[in-house]
Structure formats: structure tokens, C-alpha cells
Length: 471
Image (cartoon, rainbow, N blue to C red; front, side, top):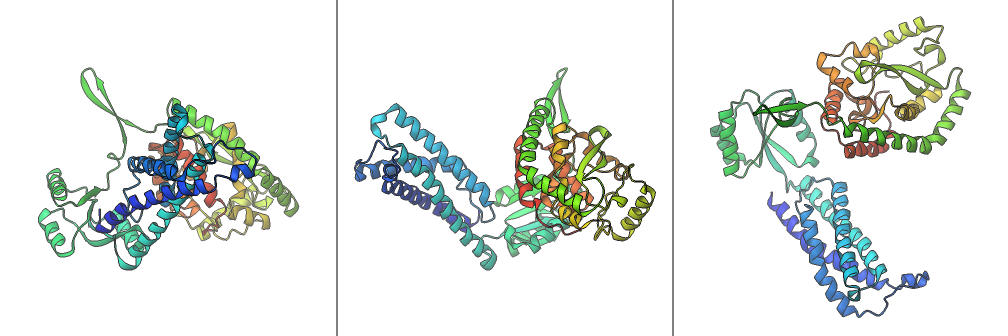
């Protein structure tokens, strides 16, 4: 941890303490609010000096809970929304402890309003104070370079070059690439550290031997340098250790979506899709009317896609093409529509790999341009989720002609149900190259959890109506 991070970490303790005491005093000051609202609280005349002493004794309990929740491990690049969630959780735990204590010894204190008000105010004050400190840290990081971690990159390949480019172009990450080398020689690294200083080392070089890596790890441990490495595909797999006939056996797990995992995901899908249908039904109704008034043809377009296990199914979408350009058996001009689409793919596709994305597609209607730009065309897929052909989160379903262009390893995407949204959609939507989309979806498959599904769905709300670049 950098000196600046140690300073701000230590600063948080008295600041949090002050905010908790301020919240307690504020709650006491507004204790008459329930009387105004005719709620008749039990406590009005508790002496302030005794109340303050109790608050001073209780505040360290909250600091201890904050510490156990990891709220004093501070970097200027931390995600503030995660910290806010931790503050809410830790303060709520403290509240529960206080409520239990008062329940066991009611004569100590009996004002429920003051307790609840202090909890809400403490959460608010601590979050605001930490946000201001976070802003100061960010400013110092960007404008003064205070708190920047000097990173040495070992390896020259596509993955390492990508990391180098990201670090160099985004100062908010809090890293500075001091050098990028090919060798893991400790002698070379010693010279770089003496000349430029090293806080962290990131290795991505499969040719480094176990002996070299062991020496490098020892060197980093001795000199307080963080050691990180980009793993191979095998190293990132999920393992399960077992014993077979007295011999240790390691099983590589494809996904946690087995047994109860699959059941819990299906329950979540049903609940979330029903809720989605209810909440978006006014939008879907207006969209259906607009499509009907704008052009001839069906409101819902059924597009054949490949799902779990390679099985075909129909994805429901609001039609955003003119009817004569829709790729479906019901279209009497299907052959002409297919020829036009192939021409547009060759001339105007902006995606690499087996997938295509036609920029400035002339086949769209006026309404279609709008609803696709903001993903409104995909709202009927809530019914796909409800009927069980899709999931709320997962890899996006692709057409048969796209799947036929998959490399063999890409077929891992077909091992689970496709999703209405997914890792790729909240990380770049249709702007990502297929290979990047595949890596994100593979991470999802190997690391699925119900909480991850919830996070993806919440993030989707934020990006749903964001304009796409490649249209």
C-alpha cells in the first residue's frame, strides 16, 4: 500500500467516528419529529450528556464492524458503489446488535425513532464523507500522480499489449507502466527497481520456467512488490478435488449451473421475466401500435436462433425491418431479401469474426431505427425467458449460419441457455468483437452465480437505453 493510501486509510477512522457521533447527535436533535407526526414515541427527556456518553461507547463497535467488512483497505481506484453497499451492510449489522442489546435490557434505552434515525443518518453521513475523501484521492491521482502504482510488465504478446495500452490511456486506473520486458530475470528486474521503482509486477509469458517464476515470487515477497500473473486457460478453470480409489483426482468443472444451480437460475428467470413483462408492458403496447401505424407486416418478428445443446428456437423481437426485407419463410420475397442481406454484410458489416452487424442498414423502418437503437426491439424476449427457451442472463443466441462459422472452442457457448442480456451486453453491447464477447461469456459460464445474474440485470438497466455506436 502506498503512503498516500495509508494516510487516507488512517484518516477514515476518525472521520467515520465523527460521522457516527454526528448522526447520533442529529437523531437526538430531531427526536420530536414523531410527536409532530402523532406517532407518540416513548422517549423525550433522556439527558443529552448521558446519551452522548452512550454514543461515544457505541461508536467503536461500528468502527470494528467497518474494519471486519474491509472498509479500511483503501485505494483511490476502488469502486465507490461497492463501498457504499459495504457501509450500508456494516451499519445495519451494528443496528441489529444494538436492537438485540436493548431487547435484552430495555431500561437502557427505549426510543426506536432515535435508533432508526441514527442508523439512517450514520449511513448517509459516512457515505458522503467517504465520497469527498474519494474525490480528493482521485484528484491527487490524476493531477499530482500521488498514489499511482508503478507496474513492470513481463511478456510481449496480444494480452499483455492490451493491458499496457489500457493502463497508458486511462489514468483513473491508478497504474503507470514503467517498462515492458521479455525476460523474468531477477537480475534485470533488480536494476529496473533501483532505477525507476516497482510497486507491482504483472507476468504474461508462458515460456517462463517454474524455477524462474519461483525466484521471482521470492524476490517480490522479500522486497514488498506485488506479484500478479495472467493465467492460462487451464489455470482459470474451476477445479473440484476428489479421491478415486485412494488416488487424488481433480475434476475441471465447466459451469456451476448443475443441480440446484440450474433450479435456482430457472426460478430467478421466471420471477424476473414476469416482473419485466409487467414493468415494460406500457412500452411494448406503445411500440406495437407505432409499428402497426408505421409500416405493413407483423408486429412481432420470429427470428430462428441456436440455443442450448445446438437446438433451434424462435427469438421474439419487435419488427424493425420493412416487411419485404424480413428473413422468414412467410416472406414471399425471401430470396431477394437474402441476396440483399449478403450484399450489405460484405459492404457494411462492422463486426469481426462469425457475427455481422450492418451499419446504417437501409432495410429499417423509421420506428425500427429508434427501437433498435435503444434495444426496445428485444423486450418481447421476456416471453422467451418465461417459456424457458432463454434465460435472463447468458451468451446471446446466434443464427445457424453464424454458429456454422464457430471455431470448435466457441461451441462452449452452447452449453447453457442463451440470455436476454449478458456479460458482453453490459460491457460493450454489439460494439465488441466476437472473440472479446466469447471471452466474457466464457467467464460467465465458468463463474456463474445468482448474484452475478442479479448484477448483470441491474447493469443492463443502465445500458439499455444508451445509444449504440455501430448502427
